[in-house]
Length: 49
View: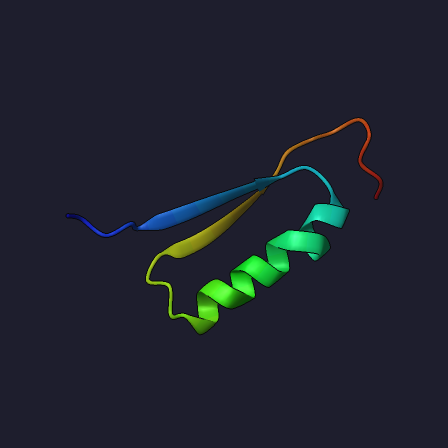
């Protein structure tokens, strides 16, 4: 089985970035996740910031 080269995380607001994306990324890094982690912030009319 081929290893994953990249992991894309999709989010749509600054609250999601601080609320769940950063804790997940920190956990993946501490587990020495082998793939590059890419964050994609999608536009959302209800997002603040």
